[in-house]
Length: 440
Ligand code: NAD
Image (cartoon, rainbow, N blue to C red; front, side, top):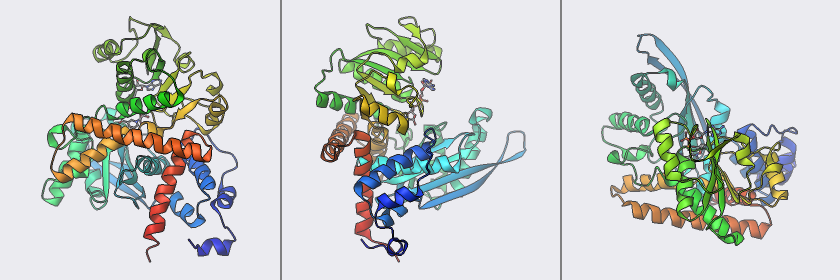
């Protein structure tokens, strides 16, 4: 594909472009830079056309809205809301909305791009988007939260839509918030539009199997990785960081496959039992006591020790930047399944690769969630709902195929799974740009 700017600037390949514009000192803890470092690397290896490289580096649309809300004490507060559409060449934007004091435009941009690559890696027809409101939901009443949600939605009414941009839950938002978004959008459209959000309650068009989808995806790709490496399932030892939705479901399903979960952790601390932790029992403990702290059937260990346990599989399913260049050399696991978004920094990637650790990257490992969100959107649009077995079966199909798609790119190009996942997804998005051509 020709690129006038590139010729004028004398730039011929993405390789040269990356070399020129890249910040010499990468701040590896910054999620935007971490994601861009991986994207740049994939673009270099693909020798991506510089014009397409420039297009994919910039979000298509960034919207900032003021969200005025009357507080319960009658005062008016004005919050800042963002929605970023990174790329919609393959389909409508897809991505969560977070309500948090730490939301920034840069973070939302990074997370939107992340969604573009994640949707492309599992080959579902969505682009990448993300949104957020800078607020502290823990200091708000339920009705204040509802007013923030409705006003934010109303301000973005031309952006959202089942054909254009479909939000989902993220940090501090949940199915209740999705129900308010759906209702606000539907009131403006004068009819019920269930397909405008995913992660809704099942009673109003949500999908069966959505709650377990991300953990189920982690289980499926871990199983495929063990098979690929010739390691058995039975007795294989696992440590899981984070015992929320993703971590606890992954642990439960891996246990069902015959693996032994020896270590788990949450915000309150970590626990270890070399003979295996019975996960249903730990889940019951957390349901009753909110946190793992005090769990009686395992011994407490330091949170950092959990990552360094002698296990076969490590599942970081809690926070960003859990594995960095500071602790990567002490990781003993043979397989890392990234349940969380961005748990490993680019600096750690290198060390893990040298140690021969097989890393299943976040954009593949935790894509089960967005895959079932896609199923939810399909069901809403068709007005025909699947039973749970169908959802589970189709999720298996998508993730098994995606794992092997990534693996074959890794083999063909002699790169690790993360680089392969980025190469596959960047090339899929780039291919659509080439086919569609440049409008006007
Ligand atoms: P969650 O809030 O249900 O659970 C988070 C868990 O991590 C909790 O148990 C919390 O106590 C624990 N935690 C927090 N800080 C910790 C720390 N420093 N050390 C150990 N544990 C800590 O959240 P979730 O939905 O399970 O999401 C977890 C991660 O997975 C996030 O990175 C999220 O972006 C990612 N993710 C989630 C989904 C999904 O469908 N829920 C999909 C894709 C990615």
